[in-house]
Length: 89
Image 1 (cartoon, rainbow, N blue to C red):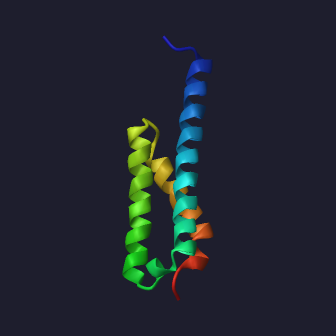
Image 2 (cartoon, rainbow, N blue to C red; image 1 turned 135 degrees about the horizontal axis):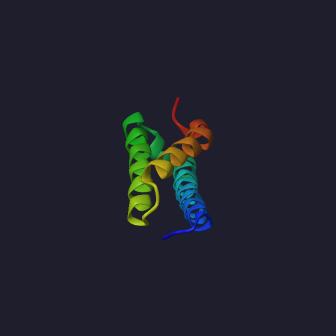
Image 3 (cartoon, rainbow, N blue to C red; image 1 turned 135 degrees about the vertical axis):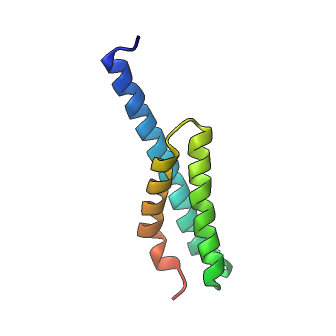
């Protein structure tokens, strides 16, 4: 039987790990959009890249036994904040 402190520690570890994975993939996606300008020529390529990084964040979170939903949400928020200015007009 788990004590309340172990449950809280497990929850905080899960939350921190999920946030770290989401932030990492969001920053990688934003940096990719900034440096690889050939990907931002077409809006279809941009959309595919954003969906791919979101799915990668979700899959990595699930494989690591973290919350894939939190990874995906965090990745999306980071990409929206930092990647918005690097998309084609």
